[in-house]
Image (tube, rainbow, N blue to C red):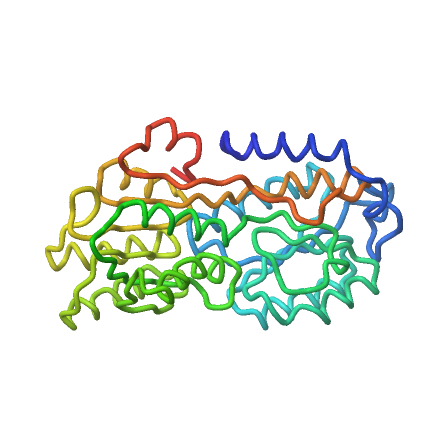
Length: 332
């Protein structure tokens, strides 16, 4: 866990001292780990529904964090299922319920469609925690959500862009997987600018977090001859693909370039692109939620708030430091 993750964990642990004693450990679960902190007859069974680590550097860090925290050495039996398709995630969750896990942890591919599965988990005595992303269900169906404020991430990025005071904003908007909390949040603030007329939407298209598809989107715009001066990509991988298209066509970008490049997630390699002046902005999204959830599970207490928000920021190429990269960057 990087320094930022440790800081967030320390804040969350402190928060648990003011939690009301009411929830997680009050009643037994369907599986073997029915008591808070672990059962005498075996490990705590945890089923994790997540996007695949290949999705992005952020997701790779998130998956590793889950595996490290919910390990046998820490008293857990971990079961995992990875997919970017909501129906496959729902099927996997149902499978974990049938197997009788004690806790179900979900980073949903889409915000909708989860009501019935979570009701079945509740009926089976399985506690549910959301992580990374919110979903549209009654909050009584889950214990807590340890998440990023995706809408705030979008607002922070768009406010930074407005502060650049460009004479005009002609934006290529490359979206993530449609219907995901990350896509909805990072899209919302930009859509508001398009609707107000302050920014012009050259193209708005999903690349489903894929670098190659993002490159194709930008190449199509270049080949059309339409003018643009901003690329707003909803993750670092898609920003990288977009820049590859610019480079192949000799279009300058980054600090003092013709095109502003914006990404999200703060992979170290992406922050180094900022430091070199090749990109302009990167929005932080912390992948470290596992330890916070584990502490909640083992405390036997319910949090005072259903939603625990990661504290995140945006980085400007002109002010980014090496210490920022080492502190907040993901991966190597």
